[in-house]
Image 1 (cartoon, rainbow, N blue to C red):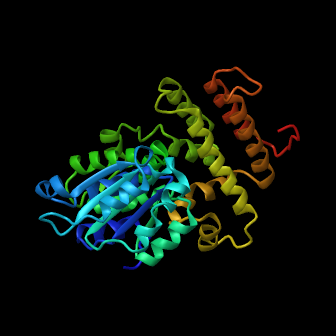
Image 2 (cartoon, rainbow, N blue to C red):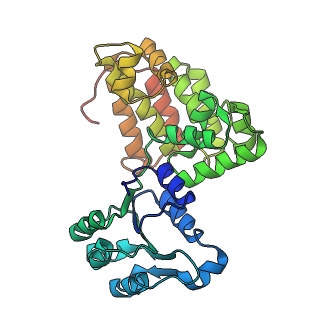
Image 3 (tube, rainbow, N blue to C red):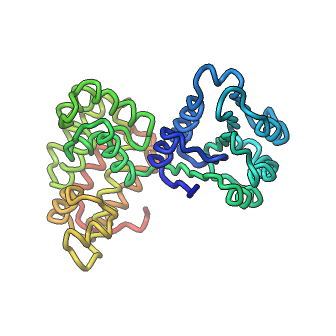
Length: 346
């Protein structure tokens, strides 16, 4: 069987019962790993599970015990499923201890190895996986740039559509917490009919994000240099700090101006060139950047990035014990009044 590199490809193969003999599920994004493990748990019917399902934790078992279970024959079933969880606790030694089996696995056993939180190590084990036709799937941690396409794909899977602003609202509010992303989109799928468009109003009503006072709108206000609107949004954040932490504001403002600096030093200012330089997938993502280009120059942008870094340090208690929202008020003022004077003290 050919190697599988995507979550969707792997889920499709499981649903079609096109199984490999061994699976290594590893990486930093635990949500995908846990979802796949659950699918393997449900690969057998309740009647088949009674005699053909084994679950082990690496810290409480040994490679020999796992291999003994894998070499058994299924009873009244085409397959038996053996799941080994938390193998990161045993490291490379535990995985290498399985090399003899994974190099020559039983065709009637599905061995699933869950290695959450890190890349799996074990040179001998990895070589044996290739020999035995096993599947290695790395669940990579999502970033601010990669979470948007994931949200769009999930919306499509639910047979819904989404407006760009609504997608940005979800991305900025939820961040890279994939579990929350799935939960919030599920809420929208329940509330809206198939084929419906997810609008900012729908997000506000069903997810609880204000369509007027959120990080997306703050970035837009700052890009337009609309001081009054930006301060209204900050005041709203101050009243609801739990759902509007300053660390998220810090991140979105830094992203705006760090991207703006890249744009200033990109010779070709066409949409296609700027999207390539910034790693954007849609021209819609350039709206705030283009607005900011009209209102800030490169020197001002460098000064603002320095102020954002100072703000980040101060909200973490470095050189200041002020209320973080007072610091945010001051940061917005400094952004709006930046003259391009660079301080070497940052």
